[in-house]
Length: 94
View 1 (cartoon, helix red, strand yellow):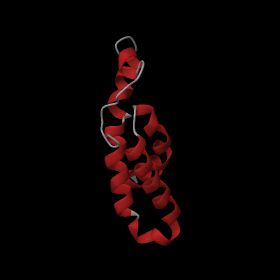
View 2 (view 1 turned 180 degrees about the vertical axis):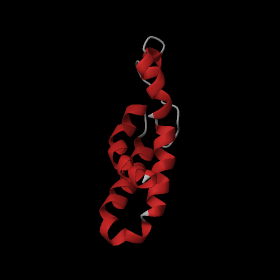
View 3 (view 1 turned 45 degrees about the vertical axis):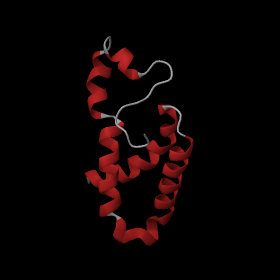
View 4 (view 1 turned 90 degrees about the vertical axis):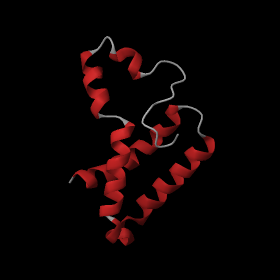
């Protein structure tokens, strides 16, 4: 469930509002966890040679993934992982 594309919402999610909002309907197909995680994985692979400089980011990401896997209840528990994944996803895109 940590890297799942689908959000298990506990209240209302963006999917509910996407029916009424063109912007959300377009953005939910591009900016979602199912796109972010593979790009971040690619970024981790591509930056692995610089592990001495980036070890803190690897450690933070790994510890956050482990914590979420242990205590996962709803999708909002994955949100603290997003900024770390964005850093690696940017490296994957570039």
